[in-house]
Amino acid sequence: MMVSKEKFEQLVEQALDSLPEKISAKMNNLAIFIEDYPTKEQSGKVGKGRGQYTLFGLFEGYGQAKHLNFGPVLPDRITIFRKPICQQANSFKEVKEQVISTVKHEIAHHFGSNETGARKAGRVV
Image (cartoon, rainbow, N blue to C red; front, side, top):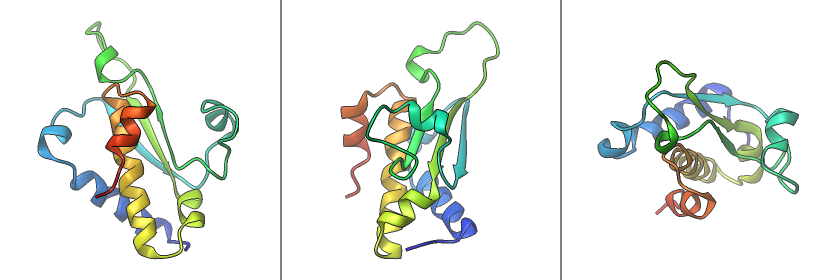
């Protein structure tokens, strides 16, 4: 179920807006990007078996828990990948649910969660 770039961006914004205030208030020095596919470099960061067509999102950075107060640092980066999410979905509802799940999952990494914790955080109820 392919969704336009504009509509997909709205879904990501809605997912971010739906986060509890106690989470969004603590997000710091974080940039969110939307791309059609991950680059080869990004795909390589997640190991074998997760490639350009199966990666839904990626956190790149050190996470809140590891930031030290030594002055300005580049922001952590979360990228949400539109086409892999859309290609696995059979309906707009599935796209929306996967966007919410992916945003929550990657934000959990921003707060220092390992993969197990991020998967729990990304579950859509």
